[in-house]
Length: 62
Image (cartoon, rainbow, N blue to C red; front, side, top):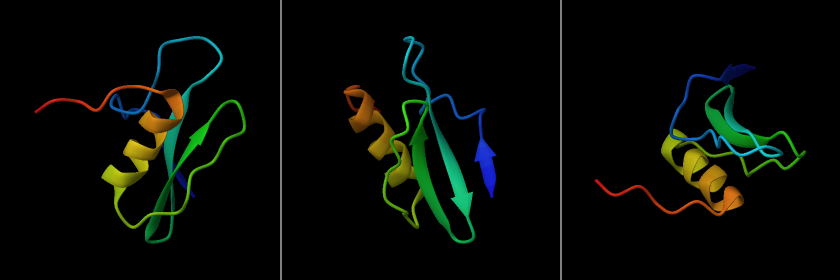
């Protein structure tokens, strides 16, 4: 299992909740320090979106 702690688009600086993405084989999922875990996704971007939704953060604008 690979955890990507350097993924700035996922982390939240607020105390209590820190999210990261974790890879399991060909799947990626979001996890939070509060114990929450998102669904396994084939898309890293979708796992990051799951993490942002968990934190209540707005979608980034391109």
